[in-house]
Length: 234
Image 1 (cartoon, rainbow, N blue to C red):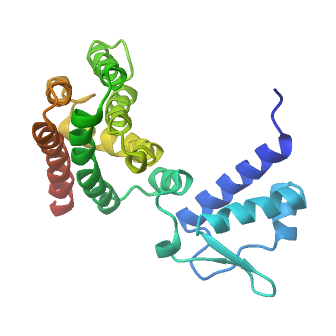
Image 2 (image 1 turned 60 degrees about the vertical axis):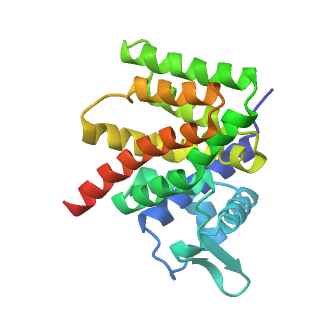
């Protein structure tokens, strides 16, 4: 199946403009170049440019109205649950304050997801969590990527919760974990996560102990929050 060149150009332009907006190249309240000027600047068609502007509008980064042009909107309008927006922010300016806020969201979601997984998880769900745990152990020996394995473990628990809303947060959590885990591991001076603590989480889920599962996840998240707060205080 061939890729659609127009589709690819639209997404590339959306990415380039999104990154530029997030980095502050186009300040809030200022205008972007007109669609005609963007066509020339990025060497793309008018239709691809129009689609990119629509996509950025849907993500809350800009507004585009007749006679007003394309205006950059304040960060409070940006859709932080959009994985593109979150990825642009984290890749351009991953502030400690933002990582703290994200970890607070994890504290609100992941302990409950683990408790639900202990109640609703199927044998297939447990096998997926265990597979991710095995990958983490392999990563300790240099046989797998520690970051990918850690993310796989946490997202497998989200999927095992049996809650459709929590499962929908999979991509959002994955996107932000890629930055936050790398950061907290660097503070701790370790390449990967504590496999034993994650094994304890898995065992409480597999043993159908929701309260213990919730508490074990909250423990590692509280540690991450304390690390980030210690850096903010410093």
